[in-house]
Length: 252
Image (tube, rainbow, N blue to C red; front, side, top):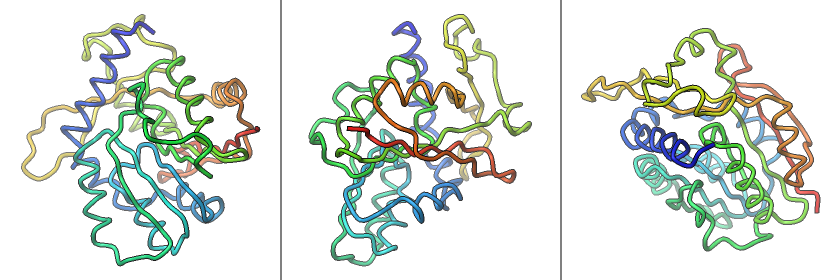
């Protein structure tokens, strides 16, 4: 993907989450069923990094669960981080668990500055990777995640499968709305509109860039970056299949 196209796609999502961050947070006040399953089956005491933590719902859930260890949530959206920090301040003190948030953009080369290699027992990325443009950039980011994990550490992620819902699939917009053509983006790349607004917000259309992952694509990504896939399942939405969840393990 040409760098100028990648930047334009990133700008689309940056503008969306800065302009619609509060509206997006209103739709994410509960943990998705798939994330809840991950919490119950895979989250153990230790050091956890959540890249794309959003409004902090998961961090609050882990703090309230009595988990021992630490959780660092990263996000590039100031409005969502503001929600996360407010939620953290309202929590009662919990000995043995450190909950922190930090502004960080995964598409910047220095996003992981200050984080040590072989540090984390687990890294989470729920509904994140499908917003990152460019196959090679996603591969480089996965290599960075691999380095941050302890040997045997796990990377848990979910990818939006909007094409499984006719109403969501109908939100796909022509690339011309973003000043792009289909030839400039990669296979599986889509532009979707947004239809939820906060009180008093103008009904200016919101647009989001989304990459629709296939299972074979994710299998190749895992293998090429040194991961083994331990588990996969579908969850979320009324039909229970709008999110594709996978658990990967660092093999060395």
